[in-house]
Amino acid sequence: MWRLLVIVFLLFGVAGAAQAQQPAWDVCRGVVAGGAPSLTDCHPLAGKVDPQGRELWLRASVPPRAQGGPKAVFLFGAASSEVWFNGVRLGANGQPGPTPEAERPGRYQAELLIPDALWRPSGNQLVVRMSAHHVGLRFASPIGWLGIAAAKQPSLLPLLAITFVAAGALAASAFGFGAIWAMRRTGSSLTLGALAGVAATQALVENLRHLWRYDYPVHTWRVMGIWLLALVFAFLLVAWAGSRFLPRRRALLLAAATIALPLTWFVPGFDIKTGVALMLGVGLAGVAALAGVVARLPGARATLAWLGLFLALGVLRPFWLLDVSFFVLAAALVLPLLIAEVVRLGRDDTAREAALTRAASRPDRLTVASACGVQLVPIPEILAIVGADDYVELRLAGGRSLLHAARLDRLEAQLPPSFLRIHRSAIANLAHVQRLERDGGRWRLHLDEGPPLPVSRARLPAVRDALDDPSPLRATA
View (cartoon, one colour):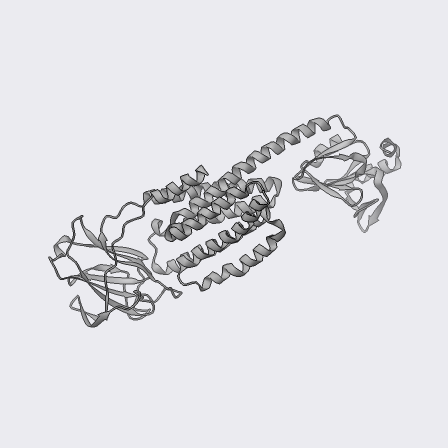
């Protein structure tokens, strides 16, 4: 529980950049005459500032300058813009225009400094000309913020530091689970590795606007990527929780996620789409965790508490969820699981070494190390051993097979004389041979069960000699 309290402290202890309130805008008809705007037919703007597919002229009355240093006009949104203050042009972000051909896309984030000499004791006026012909999609809220605030905003470094520390932890977790999967081929490690990798990628894409001042058309691809990554994270979270706490209903949970998550496309606003997708995934995973609590499964209570914290922060601080808390929470999930998995693997290795020590006194059995643990296989039951990359496949009587973490060269030296290397990738137990047969230009060895094994030309004389001499066969009969 103390870990959750630390996370809450971190999430609520870092404040975002302060922003002033947006002014009340009038929408007008406008032209540029003599370098200054000429506005007519002005009336209060109804609804949101939306320059998509058109040229938009806005006017606002600005109160006298307050103390606190220089001021600037800030624009966060998908638009090109040109700004005047008290009739003086402050500058442009791209170049707005009445048509796509006339517009030059501006950056998604821009700020224009207001010189102190332009301020009046009263009657200050801000005029903004905007257009957005190259958005690519239709945004419900194309302009995130437009207004005047202190030119020197609070530093985002603490927020970015927390986010990228969490992203680094997620990337390290993805590597760790990937290494575990490469060694043990466990489904949970693959799912958790993908979960951590997706969250780390989303952290990078989410904070791209702080690292790169991109032109506003790029914003469409960025928010699409964030939403898609949220869908994948939510689906993987449901898959992991279902497999761990509700395996018999896992397919039902995944079916619900497959249907519900894409429907978030119809939610207005990409921030809300992404948040709803994450909440859906957390909710479905919570169903599995709750079932695990009822069944008293290990780890279910901690997982349910984590999911509850995720939901609470999503409701109480929805905008923080996408900026920082999601990544901190994701790291808080996968890091303890990675540590627990490493500890478990260490215990398994210790148990395996003990089993190998006990097996040393059983020369009639082969000690097989696999993902399932250590097994003692009676040597007479082994029909053949076939190479499979870094593993070997043991073909056993009765149609069974096992993967063994060993190499053919080492096994060839350990096995009794009845086992013969017949190919660079195969060892056969001669006690189970039925016949040696030519198949076209190749030779094949047929055993009591299973498919025939290839015999290389270089080893064919040794195979014939061994089959003519029955002594090795009698040795293991």
